[in-house]
Length: 51
Image 1: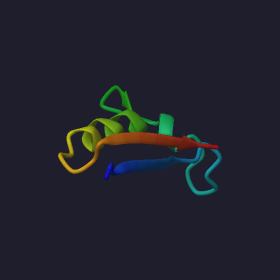
Image 2: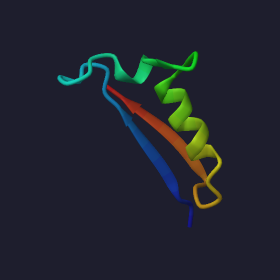
Image 3: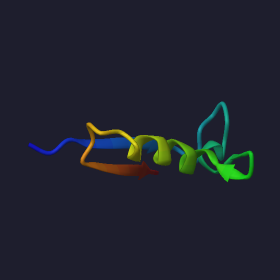
């Protein structure tokens, strides 16, 4: 059985619009989350779901 991780990334959030692309130390937040998820030994695949 394959295990897939899904990262929800809403660009039009009401509290923090554009949050997935907000830069943290020069990298977008969504990239940082994706990189951490890819390090997981449990997940076979990581998908980013956007609106």
